[in-house]
Length: 120
Image (cartoon, rainbow, N blue to C red):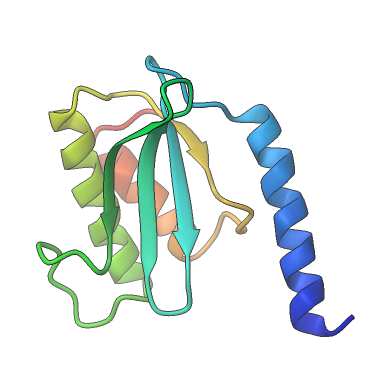
């Protein structure tokens, strides 16, 4: 198995383990993060109803960025998501880091969402 496949398998196992514990409810929806090489995406999901309450990404038109794959972009996306979640009536979320390590862009996004008023 080559290195890229091994990394993908390990991440999918981490995702499965996290998803066993973190479930989005109407009271406390799941905040799911996906980090690609060039962009970062985040959604607030109610798993019981099977719907996305709000979402934000570095590709959105209303987010002004020079680059989409750095910590500054993650901070902007976190702030934007907190605004959208507050407008949708969500104040508490369960953080789902999507199998990614909690540092760098994922941590910057989480800190910005906390500063924006989300609790997790």
